[in-house]
Length: 255
Ligand code: PEP
Image (cartoon, rainbow, N blue to C red; front, side, top):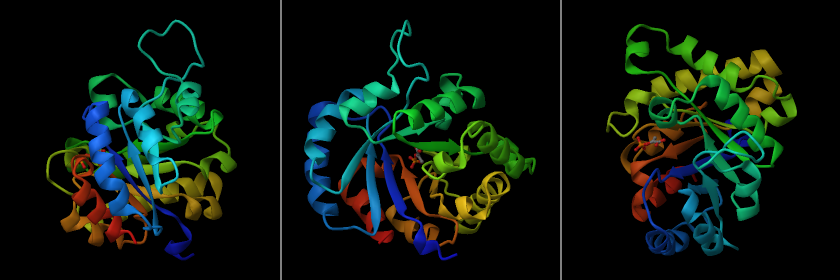
């Protein structure tokens, strides 16, 4: 199947950056710069408090809004948490799930990632499911096993129809925010492994339809090479998404 049947998705992960007024400034620069660039979907995953501003500013544009996490319960005594229905009603369309910073600093596990992913799907949000190995795991040659396990557990009890709606982001933890990028060959190889896990579970048609992004220090200077690879259908971009010109250059590389 031709890679072009899959929609490329370039998503920015702003992490804990940008107040609402800074969101206004960044989006007022970004929106005109990416206007008309329909060769990929353009998403900004913003802090919860910026969702309202981002949704209002991007209305009628080609920029879509996502959140960076979601709780798995519908409501209740979970102080400080945000539900999928809340995100949906605020106008978010995407949500990052299982980012390595959530796993590393906030104790998220493959099991809670699975619960969050199912809650997101049930609310009609598009999950951006992050998987990826630690440096130690790569050095010990267990990258394939680690990403396969993370992907399989995240998708437990998820139907084939729903699996097609999921975006998977392969993010080697050693490449996130470090300036150290996986080579295009490494990225393609692991995205291919993820696709074969999807094929084993759901069949080739589903596996070929799923968008698999690479994330980890993607920048204007390396985006085109990474995105040229068969299994790399887009990018999840941290640092470079905070500068409109850099993020636009990555969107350009995906056209
Ligand atoms: C990320 O936060 O998902 C990420 C890939 O960050 P960076 O691009 O800064 O490495």
